[in-house]
Image 1 (cartoon, one colour):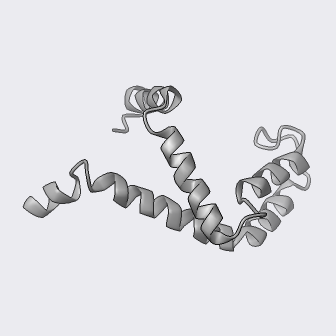
Image 2 (tube, rainbow, N blue to C red):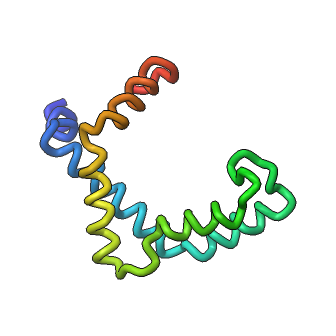
Length: 107
C-alpha cells in the first residue's frame, strides 16, 4: 500500500504522466506519415464528416503541423514540455476537467 501512495503522490505522479505524454508523442511522431496517409485515405468521399468540416486537406495539414515536422526530436520534446507547462492550472484545462467530472464521471 505504501508503494501505491508513493506512486500517486503529487511530486512523482505528474512526472510519470509527463514522461508518458512525451514518449507517446515522440512515438506517434515517428509514424506520422502512416497516420497522415490513413487520415487522407479516410477523408476521400467523407469530406462531409464533422471531423473534416468540408476541408479535409486543411485538417490533414493542421495535424501535420502538430507533429512539429521542422524540428528535430529534441526540440519537439522540448515543445511538448512547453505545451504541458502551459496547460497546467490553465483555466481552460480546469473547466474541461470539471466537465469530465460532472458529465462523464471521470476523475
